[in-house]
Length: 354
Image 1: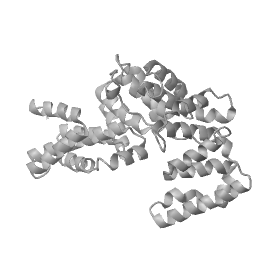
Image 2: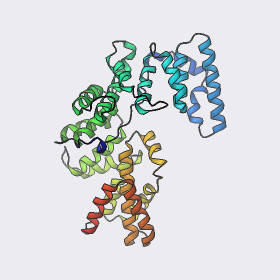
Image 3: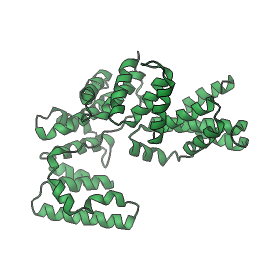
Image 4: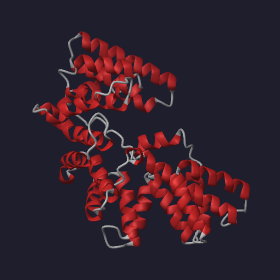
């Protein structure tokens, strides 16, 4: 593992887990289905704005009647809408009585959402150390986030050992109800630390993949492909990569582009690579990261691979009409997205291995 903070992966926070104690919300949701479908209506801005306004009015009325849960729901609605200052104010008001509010404050303070104060670590520690049964469903996710803080050295002294300890607790031996994100990060951690522990990496990626994690599904495909931590198995590798690619894993898509090129399936390579290479690097990467829960670093890496191989096909006229000017455009995009990867591929190109 590279010890320079600037070269370390930028991890993302774990979203708020569902709360089994708030099942009393179900009858209310059944009576007011439109209120709880507001996210689906975002395509129609006017309709969506009306739904949000209606939701806030209903919550205000429930608060007036003394419904304590409505305070948190109002803060969460602010949070989902990106009204972070209002969300902070609401969560701060109820943090002593509501563990979910404490958790959300931890995420917001750590990620700098609506605030510049760096107090997220303390909130996450409160959740991890809480003996209250109502905090139990939050503890795995909070431990993952706290491990992230130690890994990144933000708000605490950087410590890979403490990050690993917290992630192992959060992963809970592969329990599907624990932090699946921690299981996936352990796979990534063990495959990048020095010395690498590839069998452990394979185990944790397998657990996370079995629990539905998309990042780990792509990682397993590559481990099978190169025989890392497991016997090499091209069939299993392609199965994992194709399934991950279909589910939106851009890094898996980029690696499939490379496979198609090396196998000389140029028509397939060109069609597939163009779709990925044409993603907008500014707007699409954050959106894909949010939808797939994959790390932005690997999304941009997959886009860079696709851009480079698409450029190579254009340069040589493989599976497409030769076009050196457009090839330069895609080579430049690969360099912007991931200079180190583009440099590595360019070296292979010079040696006539691509």
